[in-house]
Image (tube, rainbow, N blue to C red; front, side, top):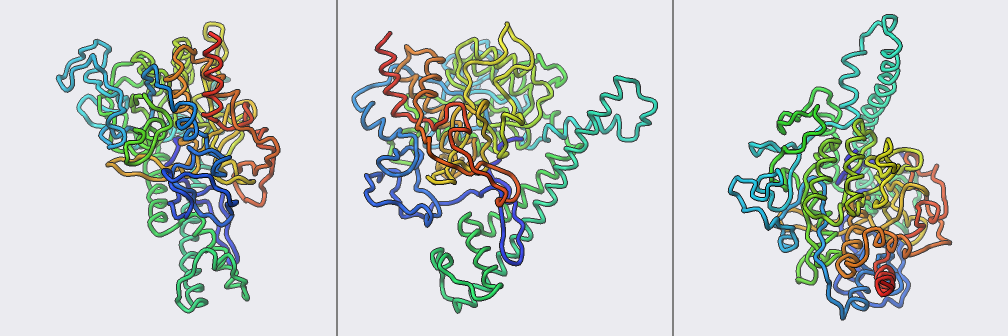
Length: 567
């Protein structure tokens, strides 16, 4: 399923407490240093009393600040202080769109120098007219764009339901019986998702009601005077009613929940019901391609922003927002250009579009491809596999978010994957691939973001993905969270290494990143989970990924320098 900007509040409010499976997006209200005020912190930070991290924490070094960032700020101030980049790196952001005019991105956008802007011609003969900053595979030639789309599960369910919903099973042959059995599995999954969607709406309604009740109880308790988070923490309830109010309000404050967030969550559920899980909804006519022809490549338009570029803009800023320009944020990479490739709607991306987006990025010079999207079903995986193999053969590093379902990817798939559904030129998997899980800014058992997918065999590395401050459309900035945010941290790190050490191959860059992580061998963490937090288990952090660690830019640059000298 497409990575979401707003994560569902799965909370069942009861008379005496409440529980949740995933966090909400939070806003900065901390007294910790800002991004431009990092200093050596001598006093121990009490993370348990901190509601949100400072902006830019993911750039920081733990030894200097106690925040478990990627040490990129330290790297720029030391390792790279007397060096200049030797190559301009291109990172393709396959996403829902990028605001190319953003004040922190306009100077780092990739520009197709062989294309004359807005002349209605394919000047460079690459098959795409006026592709100045990239291409949009979910738009029509008339300029109209797909915004919402269905989920892949819905697209699989629809034709099967039409075929088998009222079928007389006694008339089915052997092959049809197999399809009917598959239909039963898909129908069960679809109905489960729809049921959960309804439950999530009821949970939000229940939370909203509990929040209002808790506020009234606390207002009466404090005689309508103002109360802080610390006041609620220190509150010693003398009644079941007050205990209920404390539990609810602590949850509300810790997750920065207000009426606006509640409304946004309701809106998202409404849209999922209206579009994502609606078998009758199909916006593909907007694109105007022959969708059944998976070999078709030349369709779409050059509107790389689309109707909702919020997610892709945030991702692009994490990678390469202009550094040290006195505004906004700093990207991880410098001397890097963002190629915007739109293929991800508000819903699930389609395999055909993903494959074409990868091929477009490769053919137009991308060194790295960031893919902050994923889904649980891939009916045309072979089409994507061929594109992944193509990128792999051309030396392009692919970086993908592991997913936000709090699942073990060793057991449950999150597509696309680096493993092929069939052998391609004798290979069973891509070699230039990094699957990225998300860490939080908390140093204890909550170190792994509670929404993040993981996998000792399938998730390669972790990176900061909780409360990452980055660019948003219309020159705005915002905190977001998800493996969607962790993936571009790693993509940016790869681009930075490539910019300074162009003599290293993409495979060497990948290995340098994997071999030089921040290790936490004694760190026990709560394993991300769905359902009741009381059922949570703990495990060693090193058991959740292949590399056993978190990307560390400082260490990777040191290693790259040494490797480069050996050449």
